[in-house]
Image (cartoon, rainbow, N blue to C red; front, side, top):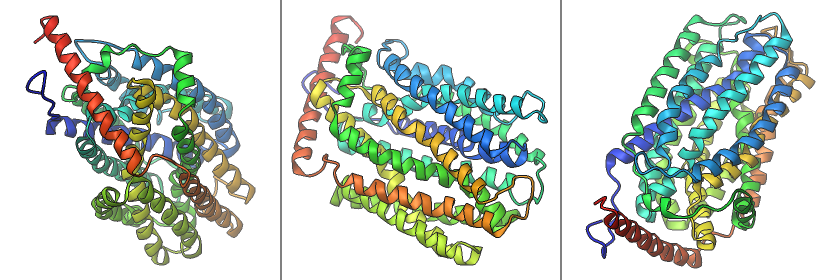
Length: 471
């Protein structure tokens, strides 16, 4: 921004990198906690699947309450010294790391199921609270750091790269350290690794807050009231249609991330380095195809490419059920799954940013964290329900956490829960997205007009700073 009459958006590379490492670190902490904790408490600590399922369902109640409240509070934050979003990241980082570490060190008698159940529930509630505070900000940053589609796409690309790296760490490390040892004993290296990860990631998140960029003109906007904000959000039809699809997809994603531990340990029976082969295959293809889908999205639009990713992933999940009974036969399905996942990982943040843009055309305000809060109200219960569905299904088929060699029926239950159930949810998600309206020339025109509105807001903010002697 060179003058009050010229608009030239520039987001420094260090800011894009800061967003990337913030995203990656958050993905590592939340990814490990929410994917591995079910297997850890069930197989390693011996808590019954029924009690874990109940803990997840009770946890969903808190999720429904806390996300819109924190979203509302974060949107009303206005600090000239720290910014609108940055304080939550900077001062929340230490708590993020500490609560992550506590996930793996129950402070109760492990032989008492009730106290172990209560410990799990409390840890889930506390960890999710800090994850919500930082995650809402992280969700909103691409739409707030960037104004133009070009710059925003660059920010999202950084996020996609580090998200992929975060997913690799959050899956491969716990899978490698928790599975394949043919016993219920906890590997001491797992606990040491969790402590180190909690410390390192929280430090990275803290440091990243000093390099992030915000569009500070949003602090001049009068925020909507809590009830009015919810009403306006629920009037956004593209948001509701996307969330209907997103809820179904997240059920599938949760089941997959929880089920992969059971699949590797009890169906494939892998040990050592072999335990990470399936996930390495997936993430190899995610990295290869992310730039390809980025170009395809620019050519064909977000909607079409995102739907393709969902349809492809759902179809390959069925193939995994047919071929995934041995590692050799499962190689092709896992490679193909990585292709579908790459489109979904890349484009979900961009679709969410478009929805927030559409809201601004109606309300005239930037409400990223309000949308993140409402988004979480709808999607967070999917995490709880997904875990409950998986645990209930494998229990029905005869899974017993205290034995290493499971019956064929138990293995069948794991395979159905791990592949066919997610396939159904993902395919349904793709069907819903056909009705998502933010696509085509008319929407592109609205986006161009919105860019001009952002330019005017930025100019007004510069004028405000000059009038108050800030520049």
